[in-house]
Length: 220
Image 1 (spheres, one colour):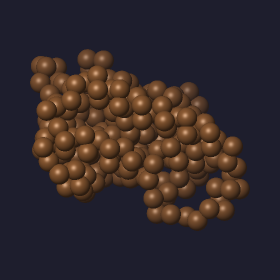
Image 2 (cartoon, helix red, strand yellow):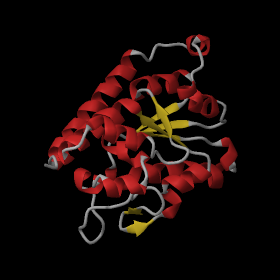
Image 3 (spheres, one colour):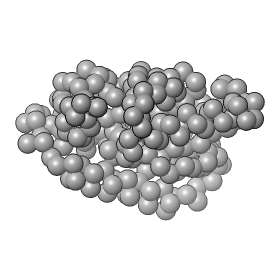
Image 4 (cartoon, helix red, strand yellow):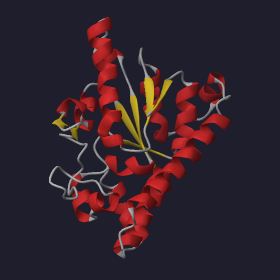
């Protein structure tokens, strides 16, 4: 049985709250401590981001109708148009966890596992999405905004990170709803993460790392 939208949102918000509280409790970590820690492949995204001239972490554990992606687009556009800063000097980071966990997986996974139905994400006709609606041509505020798609934002220098903890939890929920084996669903989703999206161990640590590296923070 597909869980109710309320149940999914409650779970997502609980995970999001845990993430924010954990980040707040560990926010005193220093840059020196970050630099002294061993470099792990899962943290490679941070080096790229920390080296950008302008960088901000956009924290969005809920979809918000795609508005968080518009905010990232506006961040880059404003630096371009108002301050003359080129895309290459700007590296915003978007977070995929909680209710946005499945932003980070392919169209094929959305179709195969009925993710649109699971999340109660519907198109303009009221039908559940059978593809990732945020990947290429999202419809936001009633308009198709390709400029705010994950792919376009990546091309302009944005980084998107996907929480492995959230992927594990939500793939388990999805598997239970469909009567499937959780490990198999997780492995399938993991193998079909969108190109360029970085799978990181846990958002609770990534938010702390971003703060330690000097990224500003924008809660969506």
